[in-house]
Length: 322
Ligand code: EPU
Image (cartoon, rainbow, N blue to C red; front, side):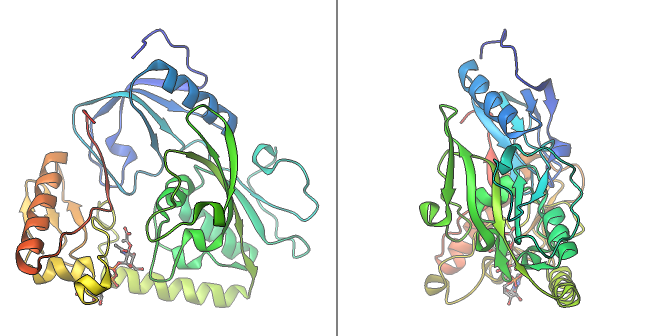
């Protein structure tokens, strides 16, 4: 990588990444860039590609396992791009460059649309929609991460997926050109926003007016069910595997397959397969990336041995050498 690059936004050298992931695992990256708005993100991407090494995007670090050691190249973090705006009926400018406060005042007269930049947190968006009395996002209650990662992987669960409420996304291609893409252009599917190597700078979310107490009740129910079934208070990367095609697995989820293979509670160093839900691997303290990778291999082998089903990873892995 060209070391004399002048970066277009805040840049940290040899930045530690573990605290930026929900698993709390990972080494350092040569350069960490922290743009504060969509245009800075675009400039950061162009500069990072010009510098020559690998370029990676980091949102909330919720579905990510980073190897230990020093990652070459650049990581661009969207943590400082948290803005969310209401898309009013009368707004005819470019919502992605709108200046204004993050605070959103309820206004029943305006259209029920939100514009969020890629670093807006999913929990923050769920809360904002509830406060405005707009339904559509409460199915994502308890899902960690940022909008950008959530759009890229179509985050969600039993009660809904992010793309259910997305009207359009704004993305940047490798050359730095900006495109707006509607839902039909992207054709998202289960855990896949289908954006290829395009980088999300933000999205327009379309919600519906609804009664706040009803939204609240749904959020409460979903969260209670989630807390009973998943180790939500422990360090994990969320579900490690995608649920297999129900025809292949006779309707069994990845978690159930892991349980039936006898892999719950299996441990490698500080990493353990959650005794509560088989599709979670927990960092019980001091786990290394290798502990988790070994555990993933063990689980895949045990499930394949028992059922013939080959589990596909949902969690993304950043390796030093790609
Ligand atoms: N089950 C077991 N044992 C286990 C785990 C699950 O018997 O160890 C059973 C459950 O009792 C249930 C069934 O398997 O009957 C499905 O489990 P669950 O309801 O927990 O849902 P899931 O399919 O495992 C999906 C998403 C989650 C999301 C939940 C709830 C995937 C891979 N996982 O889990 O998303 O939170 O639904 O909406 O699609 C994630 O993607 O990171 C994630 C956590």
